[in-house]
Image 1 (cartoon, helix red, strand yellow):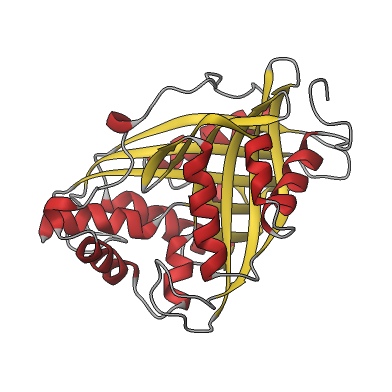
Image 2 (image 1 turned 180 degrees about the vertical axis):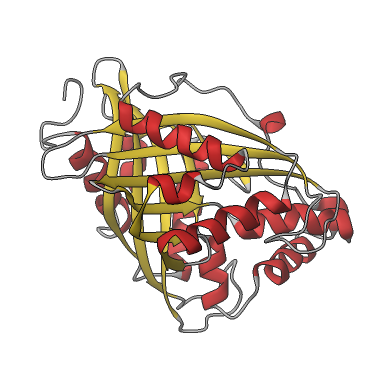
Length: 322
C-alpha cells in the first residue's frame, strides 16, 4: 500500500476503514485528509466539485440520520497503489429518520438500504467518485412513491423552470481517473451477459444465472431465480427500448475466501418511449447511472446487486410531462 497510511493492511481495509471513521466515528474533519480538495463526486442527481461540498452534505445527512451505520458488504477493486486504485464499495446502511431534512419532517422511521460508491484513490486520498444510493428504497420506507417524491423535489426547487434534471454526460467534469477497469474474465463475463440482456437476448438469463440465484434490485426489492431476473431487466429495458446501453467501467476479481465476482458501472441514455417499469411513455430524454455487483458459483451467477436511483429517473420524466 505504497503512499497509504500503514494502519490500513490493504485497499478494502482502507475503503471500509475510512468510511467508518468519517461517518460512524464522526471524523468528518478527516475528509480534508482522505478526500482531495478538488474531488469530483458524481451522483444521479448532481456533480459536486470539492471536499467542502462533500463535508456539507455529510453534516446534513448526519443531522437527519444521526445513528446512521454503513456496513461494508464488499469492495471489488482494480489498479495498483502506485498508479491509483478504483474501489466499487457496496454498503448496507441502517438509519433512523430522527431529524428534519431533505426527506421532510422527522418521522422516526428505521431504514435499511444499499449504496454503491466507486472511488479512485492514490496517495491516501480519494479524488474521483461515482455514488449511487437506493433512493427508491429510502423514500418507499418513508411513505412516498418515487414518482411523488420526484414531484416534491421539483416543487421544492421552485418549479420545473428552476429544477435540475440531474446528472448527464453534458454536465460531467473530467477527473483524474481515466481507466476503464481491468480485463479479468469475471468482469468480462458479466459485461457480456448484461449486453446480451440489453439486446433483448433474454435466453441469457436461464443460460447464465444459477436457478437458485439471490437478486437485490432498486427499491429494496429482493428476488430469486430466473423469473425475477427476467421481470426486472425486461421491465427496465421495455421503458427505454431504443436507449443506448453502455458499459462505463468493469472490474473482475478472484480473491481468497471469496467467490469470483464482478463490478460493472453502466449507463442507459435515450427516450422514455416504451411501456415498462416507468409507466406511460412520456418521450422524456432520460439518463440512468447504474451499477451492478455479481458473484459467480458452479452453476452460474448466484448473487446479483443492481442499483440506480428511481427518483432521479422519475424526476426527468416529470420535468417532461409536467
